[in-house]
Length: 464
Image: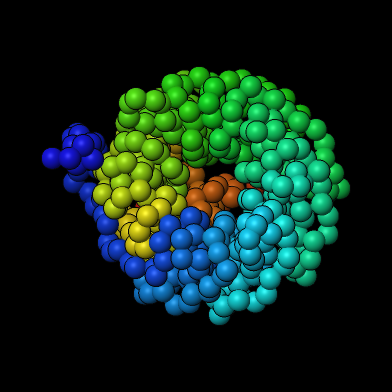
């Protein structure tokens, strides 16, 4: 038995918290035509996953229903991060034009035909993030120490903002209208005001920064890396508290309805761990062993399960919705890297660094756990009317007698959009959603999920 096989066997021992109910499983593996898939993005309007193959210099479109590659766009060399614009239904991906590698263009892909729609000449592109509220793309440039602001409707650069040396890993504060960018060799967080497109200052959390997560529900930014995890107030940009874990923090994901945070760490000389933190008390609720070389998280809006990709032994650890146990560990080939989720078909897509195969995991389980004190909704969802809407939709439930639900709207990436007030109508329960988030701002078009805190009653609606 190899060391990788031994680790998979070790992780499988005792990880049967969901025994007796359906569990996620590896459904298929697909050859996407190119190796070293370095980025994935989900097209919520077409139910398609885009992937950028670094080694073979191509961008592919994979239909999440048929599991067929329906389009391939070739570029000169080494495509970068893929980002999807749900408002204009198009994707962006940087491609170098020619050596030297920092001379690049930003490829634009049509979200209907999945073919090349144009290119924008940019130089030194590093990382991208799209703002649905402003319909703008923010692009970091390591060579010029700036962030470019792209108007996505016109595909034109409207501003360039100096933020500091080697900017990367942009993160949006959508509530306060800010952009956070790691700068100065990952020792500082530069802050940009999105309304005025101006640099506002820096925060120094005393961490060699590697990952971030902004919790819209509480207005807090969480950043991690070598040296621990820091919590930053999203309004004042002051550091509120710090957490210390062994090793380097490499990935963060929130469980907003439970006010919890999950942090993947990579300590030297031992297996990686995922820590689940109660953000109310600061208490560590669980430490989960998941393998080596943890990469990324993806959270299912349907089941609440969290999928943690680990490069060694080439597996995905499936973590329960409360973040406190590993349900199962699924082998998915060597060196998995990125992960994307299709809420329409309840599938998790896992790419690889050194092969051309995409693994597909079926997202299925019994009811996820909820925090103590949450009230459950026992009855089934009886429907949403209309399912495709622009201004409002009504979702109806039939609860058991005396039950009061906690009903929330989730985006396709698992992000909590808002919790809805409940209306009682005889024996039925209704919630009305007007397409806005918890701050009262209209969300971008796409597929959303209305889910009770029991987790098995889900209505799928599409905002047009």
